[in-house]
Image 1 (tube, rainbow, N blue to C red):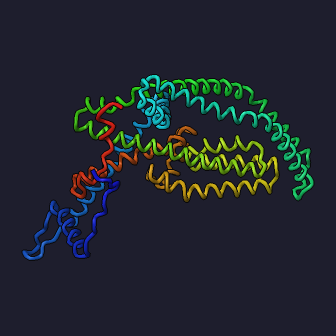
Image 2: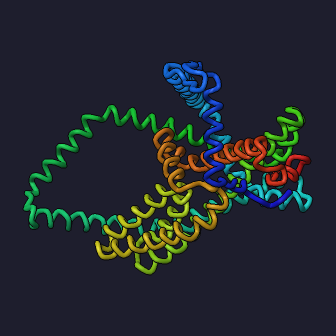
Image 3: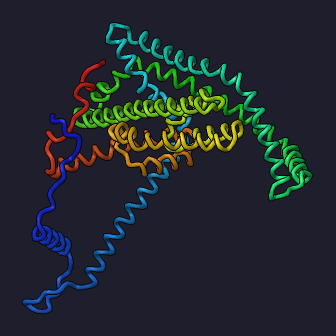
Length: 416
């Protein structure tokens, strides 16, 4: 197979060629229309026949659109029913894309599959635990400082409101605070109900995480058997297409997670160094938040940056906050113009508008998890769409088999 990654563009031809193609297309569309032979040398087409054919064409596509909308509605309704079981599977697959290289390295060095999977998961826990252990002392030591400076900042703001151009009466502010306190007390029952709901949600999160890591273990241990099994039981024809598109999806997911981790790490390092230089409290904790926030494109970086600016504002004043804002904008520009085009462009091949739209829709439908999963899901759909486009081009004779880069030859034929 060749190493070409795309479909070569087809020449449009000359103006005469294009005119001939258009004429042929029009003649083909008019073949089934009623011809009114008004004279032997001057045949005309009945206008009613033309309008009727256009109406049938529009009705056909309208019916197809309605069917697609109904199918999409049924799909999302079914998705909401099985979401509790589907979510751990999706998260486990994403975790496996990160952990599989380590597991494969151990298996290549004669480790048993189960032991290699367990060792990889334990190492992952150790890495995450080490991060939180490293930031815990700084958070504990600087949180009081942040609270005190924030309190001073609020007092300074109240003083400016009283003595500044607004000339507010502090009695009005106190009255507003009393009204807010009374409203909270009146909503005590709702708050208590929300607390119990929060406990239920927390329990659901814990269960989801436990199931996710159990599935991660089995995926790391036995995942290499899935594609050969699928190809065996679905037949050579359907099995080949399924293994090819699933392999491409896996490679795209792995590329997204790894490149996103690299981009987020670069962001966190530079922003963390800048926060230390600017003497912003909780610099290490903010850098870690920046790293994890980077896995939610656009929105995550914006949220982490806003948090850093707020901490700088309430602790070091507006000048320091503006410097932090400038630092974050600079790092984001480096990421958006250098790192993401060179790294993520190769991994996902998604336009920035599609990424933003995916994150917006995902966060609207499923909250933070939806925002996190939106881009990987969109990338997988793009893989399926491109694969179908390649098959269409192949069947239409625009390309040959040698123009398609096959990715399943090394992964679907054997275990490991």
